[in-house]
Amino acid sequence: MAQFIDYYQTLGVDKSADEKQLKKAFRKLARKYHPDVAPDDAEAEQKFKAVNEAYAVLSDPEKRAKYDKYGKDWEHAEAFEEARRQQGAGGGGNFGGYGGGGNPFGGQYTYSGGGEGADFSDFFRDMFGGAGAGSSFGGQSGRAFRGRDIEAELRVPMEDVLQDNKQVLTVNGKQLRVTIPAGVEDGQTLRLRGQGSPGAGGGPAGDLYITFRVATPDDYQREGADLYKTVPVDLYTMLLGGKITVDTPTGAVNLPVAQNTPNGKRVRLKGKGLPVYKQSTSGDLYLDLTVQLPEKLSAEEKKTLEQLAGR
Image (cartoon, rainbow, N blue to C red; front, side, top):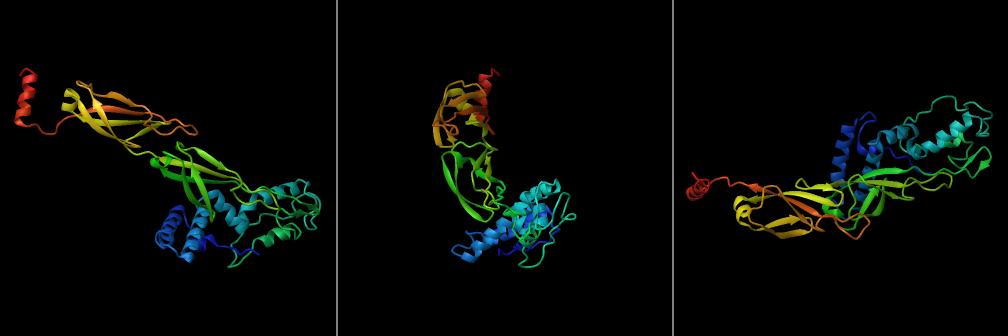
């Protein structure tokens, strides 16, 4: 029998803890047990996984509500509620001796947390005649329920989408090796079949949906695979021409500047943007050249400018 894990106890907070308190407790424990802080420490690694699992559930209002009600069996809440609805409609057969229509459960059941080692599966067995959730309902064998889908967010810097990038993620205490596709966009969601919560009664596992949050550096603007950047150029180079060095996502490039380049001139660097998602091409990098005026002028420079101005 699986042992009940008290997520509140794992994070060291009360059941009444708000979002701010949960986050504070999680960050403190995550720093303490992070593999970078405690390398080659198997116990710390397990505690790190447990802390991540607890926070993943309690930080999500919907998951937390199900956990508070159903305990460790919260992932099968939909299956249980569906069975209750069917029974209430008279279509559920006989649940462990409860016959006919109506609601045999006699009201709302709320999980109270129990103590260390409490097993909420006993509640399911009582309701379903000792069969266990999703296994057999009053003689109807083989009743299977698909596992719940899991939604997660993954924050990545822009440089991580310049090419396919593999990372190991911890989702609900399970480590998954995930490939971040080159060119993935902010807000784009990737579906991993069968990597969600396990099914009940032999049913298939749910899916994992990862939404990417790509952090674009402040000096860039992104539109699909194209990037835009403002580049300050000194006055003399804009007037007389020359070369400047510009940083791009794939490295620095030398850019020629023509004489008398107007302020705000846009230059296109073909293929210097981000990869196009699921294609072998790349977007472009657009540079807006803006005049950078000198902060101080020497006496000679000032005299020359005055002569040019006809003063």
